[in-house]
Length: 314
Ligand code: NAD
Ligand code: UDP
Image (cartoon, rainbow, N blue to C red; front, side):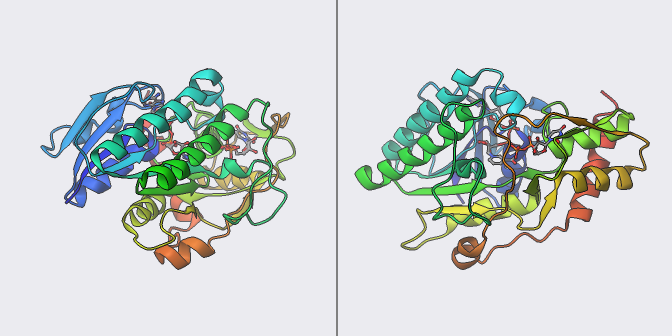
């Protein structure tokens, strides 16, 4: 049993993680400033005596007695992280410094939710952890990409300088129930548009690719990474599903599943939108013995069912 802090715990990934940690028998402190997270994502956990909800911004320091920290606090969708770009950098950088300082002080193991965005618009395919990336330092995505890159730097420096016990997960596109219906990420956007009979907004010609992982798989991977031991455990690890699809294929799959009569309309490709993205999963396989299990068709159906129940009613 661990005493676990989950920053960003009332967001999409964080709420699923809190749930699974409680199922595991852990004590969970969910910390959030509710920028993109919602109380209703965790309200079903509030009655559990091993669960605590704390309103706090990771830009400010905090002292809590814990032995595991999952640092997830950061808006993840382009619409939200570009809403206040300076705040996004502060959340990644100051948040990492504050949580690493806490980990050092209370001798907790700490995991950073990093991202495939550290590879930018990649020139190598698929992306392995040894690739340093191709990131624009001054574009509209930089606040997120560079913020996460500095956070990785801080994690490695606290590890080298202060022997902090770190884990770094480079998370690839993840989807599932509890994505914010208006956060603009592609799977949630297309499902909501299809269910409402609105136009499906396809950016560019839809030939750009992503590799989508179902949230339950991702959470299993995060928990496995947190508990793995060994000389390479502090190195960044890709977590994702290596099945690659074009965004046009995603739009077509959503239309077929929902039976929607929505039209696909083309919109300009956003600046610096990566052309291809797919994780090399060799390190995760070797270190964790983990790979994604949920097939796209199954995950998409579960996600659309949830949106049908939740979103349309709002
Ligand atoms: P999300 O926006 O649903 O969750 C982020 C949570 O962090 C929200 O609850 C939000 O309120 C909270 N938060 C934001 N700024 C904060 C601050 N300053 N102090 C305290 N809390 C703050 O996003 P998500 O998809 O659940 O992503 C969780 C983490 O995983 C993020 O760090 C994100 O960068 C990373 N990640 C997610 C994906 C993905 O596909 N979902 C991919 C790569 C990386
Ligand atoms: N996208 C799209 N229509 C939308 C939202 C997103 O075509 O309504 C595209 C987007 O331009 C990108 C891909 O889908 O090429 C994935 O976008 P998302 O924001 O979900 O993730 P990220 O770009 O951060 O990987």
